Image (cartoon, rainbow, N blue to C red):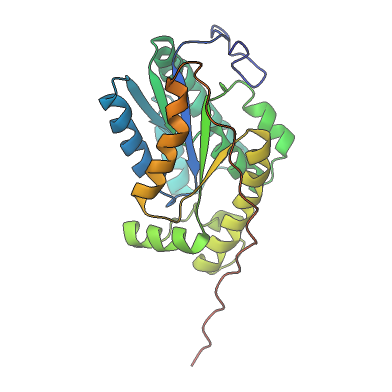
Length: 253
């Protein structure tokens, strides 16, 4: 692939085929992304491939600042979006590109698409989000984990004991009720992922199933990258899900 970015090359970074593979696992919190990244990394390493994993808020440049801003709820949506872009840019330059240059596989637990969706539902235009991340490298494969909001809710509470303020969109003032806000926020994110599925050629995987079934499908999508020619299967798309209505509040006694 000679045109590796979405349009804008960062100074000093080569815009050519770097030899390694960039595989992205996208999806909402609780969809099973992190579990799949661990399984996929183990499978690839056993098969003899060097693997580097990455994700959001892992740069040494601004990750701590993002965490502090999220705890204090002190920054506006645009500033937060720019901080996340800086975090991604730092990782691209200092982690992703060097790994690809060395011929390694980079597994990304989320990529620019989650960051774009978050920015758009908080008021940014789709065109602004596209331009903000035009310097991102095109992945060799993007797999989107599609899970129903009810499943995400169940898994999040089971893992953390409660819902996350930001993953529930409470900063958007969609509802005073945390659970209702969660469903409304997930529905807005789903609409943004829907158009990105077409534009960025996502392979959609049903993430409502058991991890071993999901992993088997992911392996079938990834395997062609390491065969002669190195091309993944054609994008797999599923029909759009109807918006999920939040449960009606219980009547007071």
